[in-house]
Amino acid sequence: MSNTPQTSDANTVDVRMLVPAQRHQKIFQLVDELQPGKAFVLVNDHDPKPLYYQLEAEYPGQFSWIYLERGPDVWRVEIGKQKQAA
Image: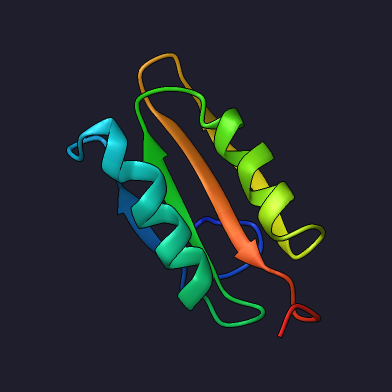
């Protein structure tokens, strides 16, 4: 059982092993494929706040962003697609 606030079946995606240039591409792919009402947990080695702003520009009001862990070495964020964002 997962301890994420919104969903118990969130997938965990650890992008720390990807080169930085590939991270956002992979995350945007996951957001594009995400079904409304579903979420995944992003694991990163720094605060992904710039990604939040990119997602908000691309998908305004269509996703949720919940910090589960805030560093200093590991950052975990649950990113979900809002149910009305079909």
